[in-house]
Amino acid sequence: MKTRFLVLLASVVALGACDKKGQDAILASQPPMALTRFVNAVSDTGATDWRFIDQLEYSPVMLGLPFRSFSPYQQTAPGQRHLRVFPTSTDINVTQQFLIDATITLEAGKYYTIIHQGFSRTGSTPSDDILVMEDPIPTVAAGNVAVRAVNLGVGLANQDVYATATAGAPLPATPLFSNLAYLAASAYSNQTPGALVFRSTDAGTATVRATATAPAGAAADGTNNLTAVGGSTIERSVFTGYIFPRSVAGSQAPQTAAFTAPAIVYLVDRHPR
Image (tube, rainbow, N blue to C red):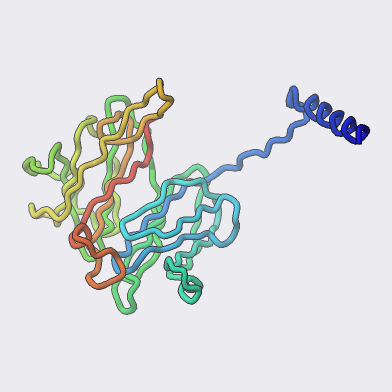
């Protein structure tokens, strides 16, 4: 027993000596990655599970994603990727079915929002599909935030998006983003940091369809080792307001009061650095 202990001890010492200067350590290199996030914009179905089924490594998974919800950006292996979207369920007869089976192409170093959009009910138009939207996130100078809008409002008219400091302020004479068609994204617009409310209307009208206050964000706190959180009051933030439709009445999508009208949901594209 004593001999075995001495051999083990000598092995540990030798291992420590090899690692002392890191001379024999082997570190796996980080391959170039794409960054992806998922958005459920299907207004007539329940929560969904998202999986890349071609490989396990660097393949984000999202489970139980409800209508109007999203995942954060996650590192994703680039190239041609095989993605499926399944209905969320504990019933094997349901979970072995899939709503979407798509092959998408991702490039390393780019950011993407992958959107499940349209209608999933048989006979509804447009039928559900996957939209891969590249996010050309800008570098923002000090004293600005960058914002844009995306229209995911299936069944809505083209949308004008107005920017005000409060929800009760008069609409400006000119929208910040004009005539956004379904599935269209505006360019990013630089704004002065401060309170920000998006209000969307049917293009050319003043009737507000959806209103939402952008998240304020939070400044960095070096004392507590906290990084900045992106928002309308924190300079160099980048974020997007997504316009969603109401949920289809009587469907498996949420039916609470908040879902009986169109809505705007903000996603932070880049936190200040």
